[in-house]
Image (cartoon, rainbow, N blue to C red):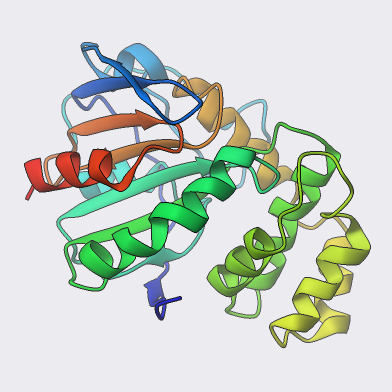
Length: 252
């Protein structure tokens, strides 16, 4: 696994209306067809995030003009720290569930090549957003990653969790096992346990799920690749590296 460097995107509210080309792909990982939709507004209804608000009031609809990439990225400030250079011209948002089969397939087969060829070269950065929908352990695992972030090890915990994947709703992501993962990467166990047992990030995980729903995410993994003008391409499923490379190269 290549080294992961990241910075944290500041949390600010934003509305978005960026042009999108939707790539409709099967969950099994084989390309289905390429379709076009007018704007991210069609999927997101111009989501506007509000920091420090309840899940019921953290989004609202509003008409807006085209925003810069920096403004678009503010929508995703409740996700992971940015992986890669903040100055990279392209950002890839991944909506994922730690229990998801296809998310794990992407992690094992494709992510490391994207990191090597695009993130390590400063051309791409990545944000991971929880979309915890498979079962209760999905919610716990998502919270655990945010607890790890309190100690500066979000991405290390992300990798450790996926590296221990063992099916959907099979118990491998139990609270006890999530605590073991924290120990495996050298987190302060008492601090981590207090965070996880106290459900410190339950609301954040629920909010992230709501943002995904507003953007039309219905399964995982779902990716939004956003260029410097805020224009995006949507990729659904554990697609082969070539699919991502085609989109990324078209935006460079």
